[in-house]
Image (cartoon, rainbow, N blue to C red; front, side, top):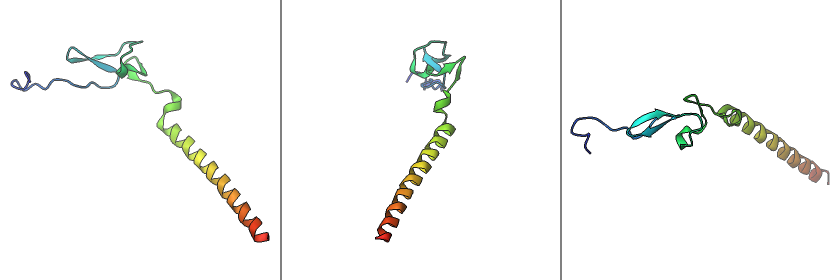
Amino acid sequence: MPFASVGITPITTCPHCSKLVDGSCVICEEGDLHPSCEMCVEGQIKIPWYRHELLLSVVTTVVVTVASTIILGAIQTKIKKKQRR
């Protein structure tokens, strides 16, 4: 490693919305197809509203609650029918 003798560590990764070009990080431009530039607008990552973690958590909770309620209701109905026999 040529930089080790001088004590300089080369950059191997860059933060979101920037890419490695000739050993330094360059901020992504509009329409850049580099994978690190995906969902970047003006150098900031902009996650679509439907991919936010909070929304996904709320939707998952609602789906699980509704499904559980339906399943438990069906089980209780079957138990009541068996008890009547």
